[in-house]
Amino acid sequence: MEKRQAVRKQADWESEIRIRQWEGKEDALKQIEEDDAEHQLFTDGSGIKGMVGSSAVLYKGGRRISSLQMQLGKETEHEVFKGESVGPSLGLELLKKERSVSTVSLWIDNTAAISATGSMASGPAHYLMDHFHSLYSRLKQHHPNLMIMVGWVPGHEGVEGNEAADEEAKEAAVRGLSPKQLLPHTFRKSFPMSSSAARKMFAKDLNKTRDDMFRQSPRFTRFQKVAKGDATTVAQKFQTITKGLVKPHISILVHLRTGHCYLYAHLHCIRKIDSPHCPACKREPETVYHFLLQCPAH
Figure 1: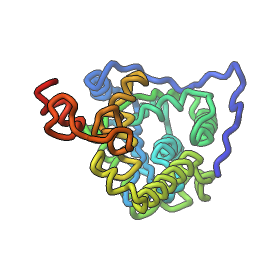
Figure 2: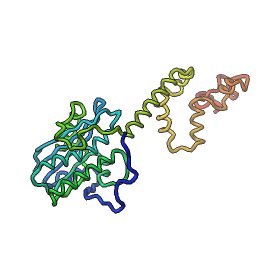
Figure 3: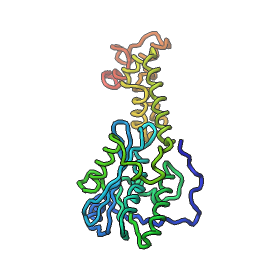
């Protein structure tokens, strides 16, 4: 299981990586089109067929020159965000093989991963970003003029580098990784299990257990008349519908939907009155449907 450090950096630490600012998709695409950096790096992480992969593709002068892939493992143990966080380090490993490096644009399609490159807060897979900064420091010793600008590339918008990185990441997830000797030394052994992935798996198993128990309940059939679906699905829909409502209004909705309210049909069901018929029209049982839509007295 991965461990999170309470304090990662000194209080005066400042990232040497610069992050581009953008205003929407069109502005981001324009920045990519106008990019004049010597090298362009496109990285991506992907989850497919239950596996997670990561990739980096290096361009120079608009021409693709190299790429690197890595398969992290199962989605039950690693999140796609971890794949996104591995990508930048794979990119720096590609830059190590270049004779001369000065200006580099690093394009990532995940905004959380972009923010993580300049953050010293503890969070999921933060140790991977620490490794990225360590690699950057070592790389800068060989290339003193190195400057990296990180920017956002909108996914699936036809940007060649992003599409290539996406394909490489998917291939890495399904088929495996580049030869281990080509990967950063730290990446040549398996990563610890993601704590976020562990929590998600626990919640998924817990929801499945709850749904299985609910299906065996004698009230399951009756409940389907009120709201069809498993307990987890219904609960999520209920939270969405009632978001922003005050408790008295939520209570009214529940009473109307279940029919458990102060109408004669329910009061008769719980043996509080002798007859279920509507006291106004005296024609039919006073259900919610009858009260709201049928009774001429209302």
